[in-house]
Image 1: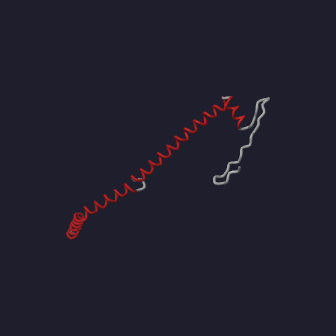
Image 2: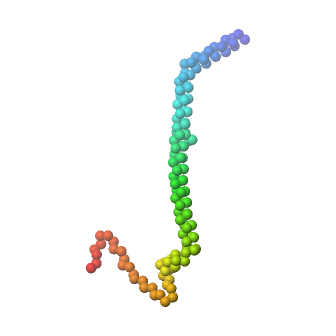
Length: 120
């Protein structure tokens, strides 16, 4: 029993010596690893910043789409209730006329390409 106790004490002494000798270095290494993980890890600081930027971009797109949706809802309401707008669309886009009116369409000249000689 006495020999085992001596081995145990000497083992504990060895561990204590190793901790005294390398403890600060191991602790510093552990802290450095934790800092690197917190900065560059999957859920680290940089990933969080990137996610926040994506959230801002999606929110801006959502605001733009909500504004466009409101404009389209107003246009639908106007098309359902405003007879002058309905008549304007019927005249301009569909070429309809009131009884007794005659529509004369003047064909437009084709657009010239830039750099081509002009006809005289």
